[in-house]
Amino acid sequence: MTDRIDLIRQNPSFAGLDKIKGKVADPEKDKALKDACAGFEAIFIKEMIQSMRRTLPGDALFKESNATNIYKSMQDQNLAENLSKTQKSLGIKDFLYQQLKDSL
Image 1 (spheres, rainbow, N blue to C red):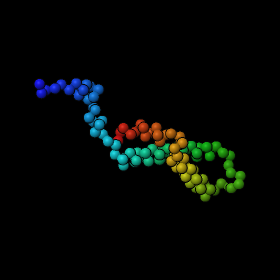
Image 2 (cartoon, rainbow, N blue to C red):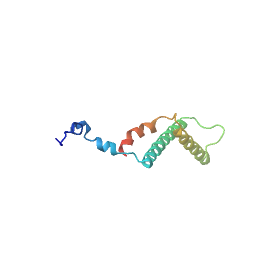
Image 3 (tube, helix red, strand yellow):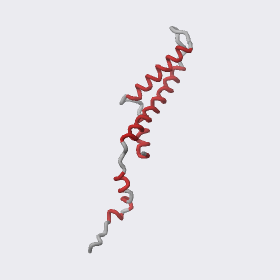
Image 4 (cartoon, rainbow, N blue to C red):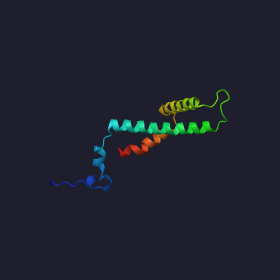
């Protein structure tokens, strides 16, 4: 009786178990995905900040010029990047990472 029946391997719910066990996340791809998700969140936050800034009536202290617009854009970009790197961010990067990590 050398032919033993392997009931576990015949179970349809375990059909892809070997594929799942063999799938190890590549640390470089995982880091790249996390960075991409954080970058997307930074872009989203920057767009929100710029939309909020457009609702303000204007700046009484400084006149509107191309230089101030560039400075405000750079300031918004820096703020958005710093906000997206914190643990208490909007959560978009975490949501995207959870949705996309299985596709690696």
